[in-house]
Structure formats: C-alpha cells, structure tokens
Image 1 (cartoon, one colour):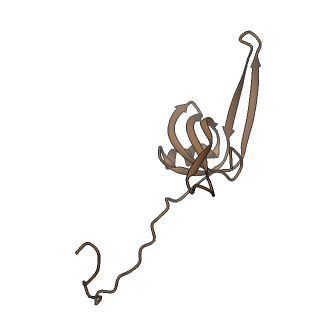
Image 2 (image 1 turned 90 degrees about the vertical axis):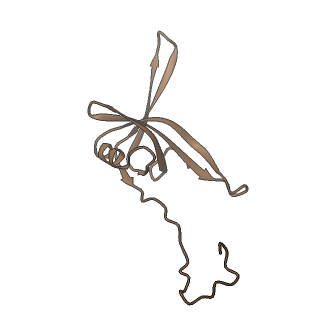
Image 3 (image 1 turned 135 degrees about the vertical axis):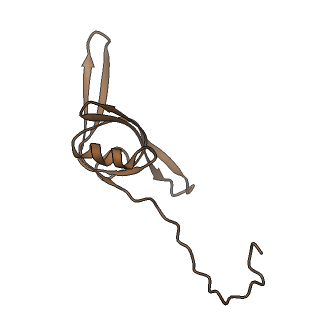
Length: 116
C-alpha cells in the first residue's frame, strides 16, 4: 500500500511552517514471501487542518493513519522540472503495538524454565 487514504505511516521528522507542517513519513508493506517489510512510499508531505494536531501529538517516531490526502504538481518552465507535492488534511492516531504476554501461574515449579 503506497501513499493513499487508509495507509499507515511512520513519522520521521516534523517541521512547523506557519499554519501547516512539513513531515517526513514512510509507508511500508509486508512482503509475504520474505516476511520482511518493504517501503512503498518515503518522503515529505505537507500537513494541514485537522491533521496538524494529530501529527504534533504523535510526534517523531509516532504512527498515523492517513485520511483525506491529495497530490499536486507544478511545472517550472524556467528549470524544466516538475515538482510533486503530497498533502495530508486528516489523519488518525495509531496506538503503539503492544506485545502479548502469557501469564505464568505462581505455583508453577521452576524446574526447566528458562532464565533460572
């Protein structure tokens, strides 16, 4: 899954610019063959409106689910270059993943348990 509505993104850096933010994010997907994750999008996005507070609350290292987004581009005739801009207007906070632990009964004998 690349840069699209519903994607989960990790925030790497945030820079405030007036009423918007510039944020460096990455989006990855799991490779079913290798079990590892592959980056499908990485770069800077402009964050506006409701998404600004979500990105600020999550902070660097946090994760968000993208909502309303847009992509625009502009051609610079003098430099003969097309610049592409990624915009995020809404986002949701994603809770950190927690590890599941198995409760060990207190009356379990210590024989054969690791880390004795």
